[in-house]
Structures are given as C-alpha cells and as structure tokens.
Amino acid sequence: MGFFSKVKKLWGGDSAAEQAPVQSTEAAGQPVSPEAPASTPVAAPGTKADVEAGVEAAASLPPAVLTDAWKAELEASLRGSRARISEWLGLLLSGLDTADDSLWLRLRFLFATLGAPEAEAETFINDFKVWSRAMNLTKVDEFRSELRYRLILSLDLEQEEEERTNVFQKLTRGLAKTRERLSVGLGALFGRKGELDDAFWEELEELFIMADVGSEATRKLLGNLRNRARAMGVTEAARFREVLARELDELFPLPKKPKVAAPPEVVMMIGVNGVGKTTTIAKLAYRARLQGRKVLIAAGDTFRAAAIGQLEIWAGRVGAGIFSKHEGADPAAVAFEAVDLALKEGYDLVLLDTAGRLHTKVNLMEELRKIKRVLDKKHPGAPHRSVLVIDATTGQNALSQTKLFHEAVGVDEIVLTKLDGTAKGGVMVGVAITHKLPISFVGLGEKMEDLRPFVGEDFAKALLGE
Image 1 (cartoon, rainbow, N blue to C red):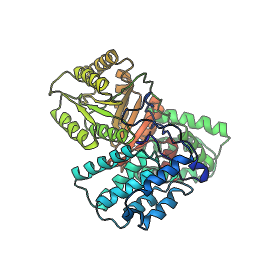
Image 2 (cartoon, one colour):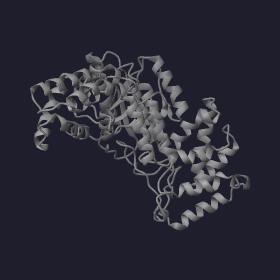
Image 3 (tube, one colour):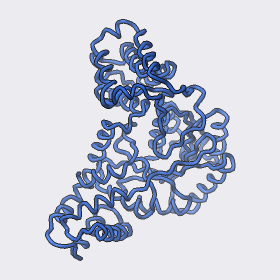
Image 4 (spheres, rainbow, N blue to C red):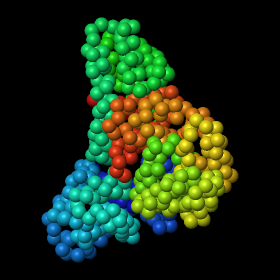
C-alpha cells in the first residue's frame, strides 16, 4: 500500500483524473489492514473536483515556488501518459544543491497537486528531514536515490513501467555472473543441429549443477523440461530456449496472502547467522513504514548482544519501534511481550528476529517451535508468516538450510540476499523446484532500496539474457 491514504494518479490521460482516489494494495505477502491507522484516515471516494481542490491547495503555496520554471513542467509531466518517476525527481531537484526549504516547498507542491492529505504530506517531509540529518546526507547527489525510493513506495509506483524496468536492470546486473557461467554452455546447446538426444540432456544437467541448482533439483528440473518439450512438440535443440524460458516463467510460486484476523501481523524472521537477517529486517521495516504501516521490531536473538544493539540502531534509522530485553533473556518471552506491546499501542506489523546459531542442532529448532506456540497463544494465528533468509553466495548451503528449517518449523517465504555479483544464482531455481517455496524478496545491493520484490518472469528473462 502507499504512504498516503488518498492520492490522485493524474497520469494516463484525462479519464484517469476522474477516477476515485487510489487505494493502494500491499506488496506481495502483506495483508491489507482491516482498519486504517487513526493517523491516516481513508478518504471518501473523490471526483474531478478533488483534483481541482488539490491544485488549488498547491496554488496557495508561496509565489516564489510557483513562478519557478519547473512548476509547469512538473504539472505537465504528472498528467502525461504514464508515470515518469525520474523525470519528476529531476524537476523537483532542478537547480537545488542541498535539502533546504526550497525542496520542502516543492515536495508540498507535488503532494498538493496529487491531492494527498496535507498532514500526511508533512509527515513524509519531516521523516525525510530527520533521516537526511541523521545520515548526514544533505547534498542532492547524496540523497537523490533515497528520495526516489521513498516517492516510489509512498505513491505506490513500484509496479509502474519505469520502475519495473529499473528493477529488472538491477536484477540483470545481479545475475551477470550466473548468466555468464550458463551462457556459453547454453549457447552451444541451443546452437546445436539435431534432436534432443541423450548427449544434450547430459550436458544440460552438468550446466545446471555447475550453476548451483543442486543435484536433486536438477533431476526434477530435467524431468519437467522433458515433459514440457514433448507437450510443446519441441524435438530440436535449436528450439529448446523457448522450452526453458517457459519452464522458468512458471517455476516460482507466488507468496500467499497471510490471513490476519486482527492486527498486528506478526512475521517471524529465521535463518543462520551471517546471511544478512538483521539488515533484511531493517529493510522490510523501512518498506512497510514507507507504505504507511506502523512497525515494531522485536529483538528476539538474545544470545548475541550485538544483534540487539544493531536492531536498536536500525529501528531508530528507519523510524520503527523497538522491543528488546537484556542479553540471555528468554526469546519466547521477548516474542510474547513484543506482541503484547504491539496490541496495546496499535502497531500494524511486528518483525521478530530470532537466533541463528547452529542450525543443525535440535535445541535451536525446538526453541523456534516454542516461540511459535507462544505467539499463537498470545495472538491467535501468529506468526502469520515465517520468513527464511538465505544467502545466495552460499549455494548448496542455502539449499540445506532451507530443508532443515522448513522440516523443523515450516517456512512460508524466502528472502534471498546478496544476489548481486554472485555466480550461484541458480540456488533460486533449486529452492523453488525442491521445496516449492515462494521467494518474496531478493537483495540486489546494500542500500535500503536494493531489497525488491521477486518476480519469476523477470528472473527468467534476466537469467537467459532476454
């Protein structure tokens, strides 16, 4: 969902201006809250008059802002055929060097033109002010990408064409080494003359194993590909690319929308130490905050004082609440008390960190099962999702971790980190085909904006270089 309870999407032609306010949908796997937070009341359906009212509100801003050349250009761009996010940002930042009053005035004009509630617009601006000062990023070149990401999530633009293309390009770069490892061999196979004989299937099997798909997953994938080739009537190597592309397109299941009878939604984050679980929690909290949700982070890994301290720092940076106890406290007690606090203070989402040491040991898995029992007792249905974080660079270890955690406590979704720059991206195929688990997000870099929803179709195109 978007940060704003009411936004008019002016782009897309005149008819778009007469539509009711956009009520944004949640990102994959996140439920729509039964009730809007008290701080962001949902506006009643609007008409063309609402748009005109928004423009009038914008016109009430100081004359110095309205006479700038960017104003007319921004209005025209907002009413264009599609959302041009980079163009809007360029106009907002045109002629500016730092985050100062001129930028805040321009953002107010943007939000007023789009009909966003004034109080929510001020919250957005103040949040960005606090963040930029805390991070000591005051120059336009330093915060440009951050502001762009905030606008994309807040205005619910992640599925617009420009941003889909931007994320696809990042994914393509992240899979470059995996694609390079596969491309020579696949190119040779696809360039063959003749039928899909035993030698063809043996070489394809070797390529998949080299790409860290895994032996078990490779056997299943080859079986699927043989069946699909027969169903499509493909018998020649030269046409096999379309068979592989179709199989990869349909391989990845979509995350299921969790059933949350009443807020908060509770998400239990699991995974071994070192996979990027702490930063993933911070990035998920950040995304949810920009989508208008009130987030509480619970520091349930009480075996590491460093983990508690890191989450406290991250919570402050992303504007989330934090619940923690002393090192060595009972993790189940942390979970119980965190949800109790969330219920009392009206949080929409609880992200619960858990310990990640010794994933092969029975005691850790029993501890996780205990946490799940305690959560369900406190808040029936919780945890609503158990999300496993795995590191793409670990290849087959990631597959074994998925198997162990899924068998022990049940995994609903996967977040795959550190995909950028690894040659072991084939592990995604292995996870999907072996465990039939959805991959909800992938990490394409270190920045907050680099954790993005996973789209199987885009992965297939990026992997095959289409």
